[in-house]
Image (cartoon, rainbow, N blue to C red):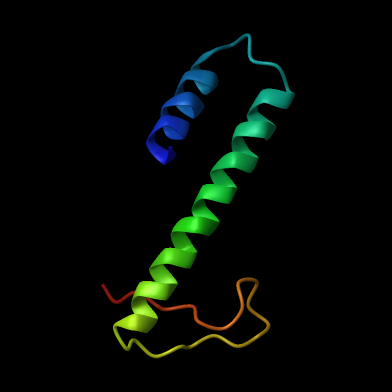
Length: 69
């Protein structure tokens, strides 16, 4: 679904006839997908033993894993 959602977003952004509400809907769907991806990445990082460096004040709660470059 995320790749289909990205394709849909690309198509909609290229369409000059898109209504004002359409980009808001796609933005909400993309935000939801990003939250899911973050939750999976955080879970995998914790399973790998990467230390947790966020406090409870972080929007997604404890468990944010800082990715090393």
